[in-house]
Length: 382
Image 1 (cartoon, rainbow, N blue to C red):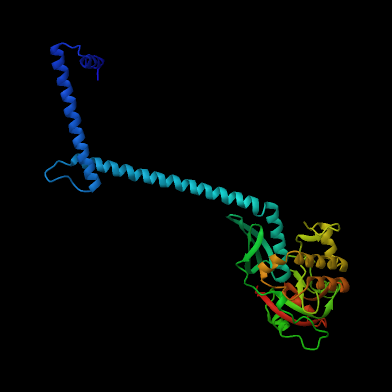
Image 2: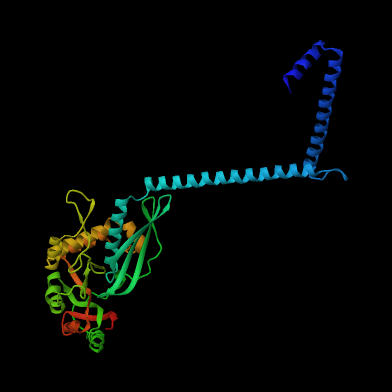
């Protein structure tokens, strides 16, 4: 609307126009009125059609209405999609934030995961001494749900016979579930306790005699009496160890009372993380084995093995919940305090051992009165 028309309209309202000007502006006004009436009528018909979701009367041109309706529907559709997408982004962002924050606040930290991994590996090698820890892994499931895994190898020399994975779930920093344990435990295999060699050694040595030259084997030897660490070195290791630690391995099994045996993973040729307790507190400490510590064990020092076994029993005592998660109720009927006291009073009593070596080398032990039974666990032909 031009300024000239606005001025004439104002003068028309005030009655200050000439006759011909009045006729002219009234004609313009009639045009606007007709246009408004037409648009008003069309809008009402279109709105009524949209409300009733029905076409206009037969014979009426409804192409405009259809186009208008289509535009409206498309706009509503795209607005809905955009809104849903924005809501989804917000929900995902909130999920990630809450999950991450809860894990950081209530889950295991990096140092705690490292410590738990070492403890799990140590416990595994106490109850499954035929396996060696061969690595670890960790996964985060969010909301302070974490999995700490250890990998175990059953090997003879350089040959891996079997692999296992022990997976422990931690919820808000506490062990709550084990999902993958599927092996036998040393604690349930108790034919170790005998007082003398009253039966003939079984056919284990016969298998070794018939094996081809170069065959590597892992055998479980049960002693006819309990042996101190230095006796194992004197009567066994000195007879079969040729200096090649890659082809020779030993895992001794200790008695901790009348009905409980356990592997002592801080032993002889195998170096691993050693656990110990601070003299001024009950807090568990972890340290890497060093050359001096390993040399002590290589010398078969009885006191060192006693301290090592007691330390491992205390590790069990302070991780009962973790042990139950790893191996269910493995110590349900046993008192760790009684076991510790037994070792304190009697020292380390080894009642058997797993030993891996060349089959012909192990035949040197055949005539030993200290062996009650030999069982071939694994054999690798040349």
